[in-house]
Length: 255
Image 1 (cartoon, rainbow, N blue to C red):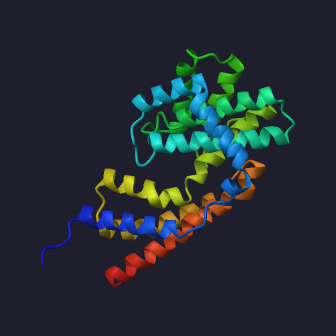
Image 2 (cartoon, rainbow, N blue to C red):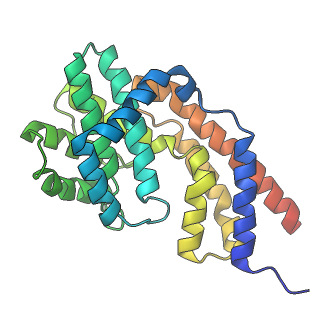
C-alpha cells in the first residue's frame, strides 16, 4: 500500500485538531462581554481610518507562520473590546473610549507588519510610525500605538508607557495577541507553520512538547486586569486541544 503523503498526514491532523476544538466551550471572555465585543466589531466595520489601514495591511502583510491578515483581524477585534472594557473601568469618557478602540484596532492590524524582521515588534513600531503619519492621528496617538506594537512580544524588552491611556492600549494589544495562543494556535497557527516550514512528521512530534511548555509560560504573562482574568482560560483551552491531539498522534505512531 502506498504511504500517505506528508501533506495528507498534516491535513488529517489539522482536521482532527479542529474536531477536538469544536468540542471545547467558547472562552468566557466572549460570553461575559458581548457588548464590548459587538462594539469593537462595529468599529472594525464602520470606522473610516480602521478600514483604510485594514486595506493597507491586507495588501502589505504576508502570512508568516500563521501571522497574516486573519491573525491581525482577530487581534484588532479583541484589542478593541479589551480597551473598551478597561477604558470604561478607568472612567474614560465615551469619546475617549471610541478613540482607544480606533487606536487599538490600528495597532492590532499593524502589530506584525514586520513579522519577518529580527526584533519584529520594535521594527514594526518604527515602520508603523511611518505609515500612521498619513492618517488623522495626533503625534501622541501615533506614539502610543507604536509603543503598544513595540511591547507586544512575549518576554521581550519592555518600552515604558508614559500615560495611563498608553498603558491600557499597550496591555490590551499584548493580551489580545496572546489570546491567539489558545484554540487558534491549534486550529490555524500550527498548521500554517507546518505548511511554511516543510517540517517532517518526526521533527514535528519531537518539538511538540516544547510548544506546549511555551504555552504554559505564556499563561502567566497577561497584563491588563481583564487579560489576567480571562487570558489563562484561552491558554487552558488551547492546551486541552493540544494535549488531546498529542495523545492521538502518539497512539497512532505507537509511541
